[in-house]
Image 1 (cartoon, rainbow, N blue to C red):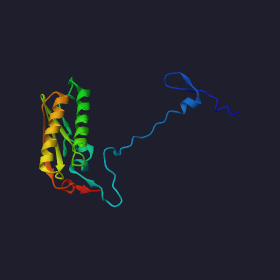
Image 2: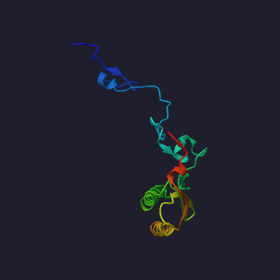
Image 3: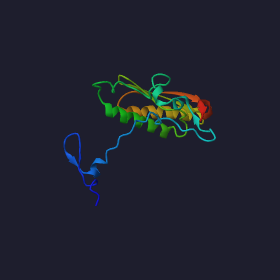
Image 4: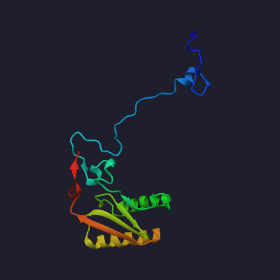
Length: 167
């Protein structure tokens, strides 16, 4: 039997640790490569990106903006979690109601008791259906969220109109 495997290791606190526990602690240099929030380049470079998608997360507040404008995330802000859940609900409701028509990300702006929702929509439906969806979305969101909701919608002919670059 190897005697060096049986010896006990002393940690900085003075406690004795078995070699099996002492070998569980690993240290390594930090990785300075940021890859989260970036889109991977495809082989054929055929993935379309909008301007919001093309800028990596570290360009927020420099070249791109936040997707939610509210003051609840400030120090001692009220309703932090409720605001985040409501924003996610609004985004999912918009993409579900305007199915296949939303070309960009849904931007939510809160001012006092008023919520403004901005998006770019494709002109794939008739104007009467578009006006119906606009009123339907505003009315239902206003009833569910108990505050006035305004949709700020811009239309484009196709999704290709909002493509910034291909990767």
